[in-house]
Length: 460
Image (tube, rainbow, N blue to C red; front, side):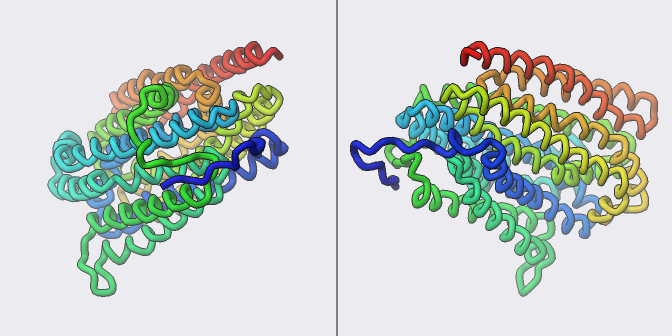
């Protein structure tokens, strides 16, 4: 399981991240990733669209499972961010040994993450749902769904790791291909397994989980093959897939803040669901629908973000300040533009969007109000997301952590709770734009500090 190394004495070839024009490079890196992230959004959305046709309880179960799934994604994605930053920076610094250690150690860490979450899925899923609701149908549906998704998460963690290895070396089209294969598999299997088509047993919510897991495993297998066959910038060796203290420390130095930031989202979602269900379970269904829908807006920005990180890390390692600055400015402008389109869609078409989830007569008016009140924060979130990731790519992940903690725990949850005390559900949604304003202030301050430190280090 080893890639071919360059011929002895051959001059190292400059990676495209150091030579292509920034605009063309960012488009080439980011567009495949944006498509990939949209495909990722399809996983949960397609599940929910079909599950909603079973019953509102089934839809609520999948929605209430989101914090557990998000925690799993946080660990897989955060570790991948650390791998990405270390690998890209090492290539920029011409340190092939550390780039290889980042790849092989990252694979080992992905497997360890799977073992932990398989235990959680098997033994802790039911207590998790009982902590949120006593509605038997929701608890049973949710336990089945989470048990399968977490217990068989080897595909998800492997997919995160091996796709990020492709992305870190600029092979974003290959990463997009693996995600498309996984998503198409999921979409095809969803109705077959949920409703028992073509002679298959009717599995309902368990079928949605099984379809998701099958798609992830197939995508992971393809990503492994593509890394071995088409990624000569790193060398994957079976004997090196093990714990390496130096590489793991560097991976988690950047990755842990990202893991914590995304994990905070799980805590926030859990808390908001607890607040909303005290009004009506239709409110939690509306919130679940919002989260599924907003992923189509945020995921392209995250894809753009993922395309930006290796470019910045590489050029920072190569001491090319002008390319770092151009990448940051162009990425921020693009992100804000995407978010503006999302804001317009949520303002103009909330009812149409909610009907994708077979919204009930009770859920629909609640959801329309929610989408229109929450969506103005999109206009600020694009800048905030990119600013935080610039800090991470440069090596200041603590800034991103502070921003996320303040937005979701220090501001959003307490404000949502306080507004809930008025007894008016519509006011609770205001917590989202309020918290994003606090995030904008911190993001601006920390981005300026980070860029000043870059200029000082590179001698601008």
